[in-house]
Amino acid sequence: MPARILDGKKIAEKILSNAKSETAALKEKGITPKLVVVQVGSDPASTVYVEKKYRACIGTGIDSEIRQFPEYISEEMFLSEIRHMNEDPKIHGILVQLPLPKGINGQKVLESVDPAKDVDGFNPINTGKNFSGADSFKPATLVGIMRLLEETGVKLPGKNAVVIGRSNIVGKPVAVMLINAGCTVTVCNRKTKNLAAFTSLADILISAAGKPGLVKGKMVKAGAIVIDVGTTKGPGGKLVGDVDFAGVRKKASWITPVPGGVGPMTIASVIVNTLRACRGLEGA
Ligand code: NAD
View 1 (spheres, protein in one colour):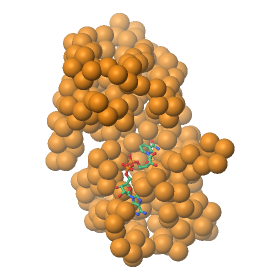
View 2: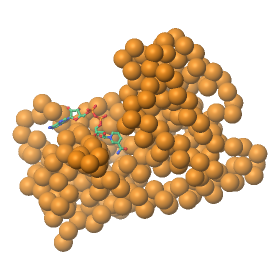
View 3: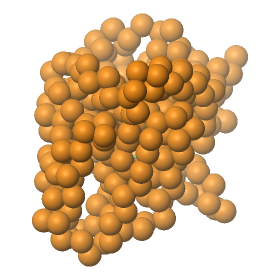
């Protein structure tokens, strides 16, 4: 039987509809949640993501603003802008779109975002809390992936999980999350020898390499859950994942499509994190 499709678009719609009700309830109490999405420069791919996050906020009633700075802004000036946002009580969430231009030290910027407003979960305080399994803001892609796994109803403890990719943004935090969930985790990277030897043992396979066609049906264990995080622009601007969808679907039990899998879940999770920041219950 072909794998069931983990429909990220549909699940994200449900999440956004709940967020809309929650936002309305907050507004009745006189609180308007607000997210500022910060972009430096005008990289077209970044602009697409920035606008998606902005539109999702507006659609749920969350106040949002895109603050765009020129590529030549000095690091000092940019850090001072972030400080102002940290101090503004009307702003609950700050999300700095990555990557940043070469002249700006990305690590310094992530460290400068108030951990209580860090809805992307990349401030080292939140990263550290995630590492130890404490409650904190988690990167939106991670929250989305967790929710997709939850949707399968499969219990994670004891499962073999393989993560392809070890970036600070996706691979490493996903691996940590799966370790904390009780999985036995293997993390592969571009230097891994015989990738298939690892992937074929995975009950849960998460691919975040950005390499179209990397994961083929013969590399996947029968019945595996396969989450495709990769997004690469293919011919005609179409988004393509890492996974050979048709081939892998014949082997897996669950699979995410690209587009319509992890992408919409990431956007919805930004909204979830913004509402958490607004409630001020957790996160720092
Ligand atoms: P990255 O380039 O920083 O990291 C890619 C990782 O994959 C590296 O660790 C590299 O060693 C590994 N890799 C590359 N080729 C490999 C191979 N042949 N075998 C094994 N490992 C290999 O990228 P990133 O920022 O982590 O993003 C990964 C992908 O996820 C990209 O396609 C990106 O666009 C996508 N992404 C999607 C979302 C979403 O919401 N859908 C969010 C973030 C990133």
